[in-house]
Length: 138
Image 1 (cartoon, rainbow, N blue to C red):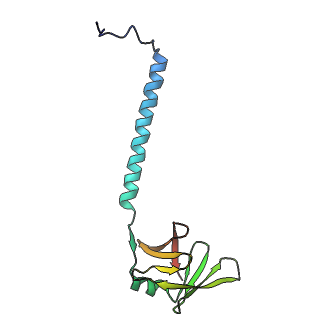
Image 2: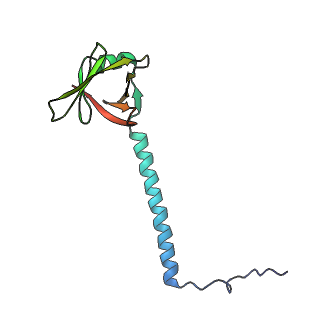
Image 3: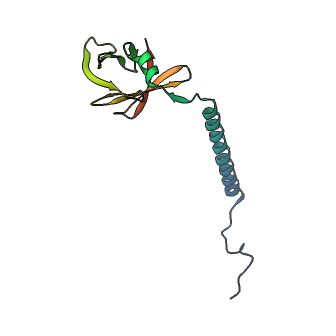
């Protein structure tokens, strides 16, 4: 069986316009993928790292003091109960009971709050929603 080394005759002819469009598309894809990677790398290297607060830091910053979440204020009292008041509402929800775990997690029967410092600001991880939210001591 003889294999032909020249397959140009077998391939369909591509005109100059189609060739240019394909080359421009490939160049644009390479350019955009390079821009995306550079942006992601730059943002990752400049972003402050999330550092989990110790039990002492959590108690000093968030227990016995009001603090703001994205939609309202929390008060984790030293007696082991906490309340929540939504912004713009007068009704306070709760009280619910919570405990301070050894690692600083504030855990109730329904959800837990895990606190972090990110640069100069605080965040908490809400286990029920599996999301991070800003936490602002008042």
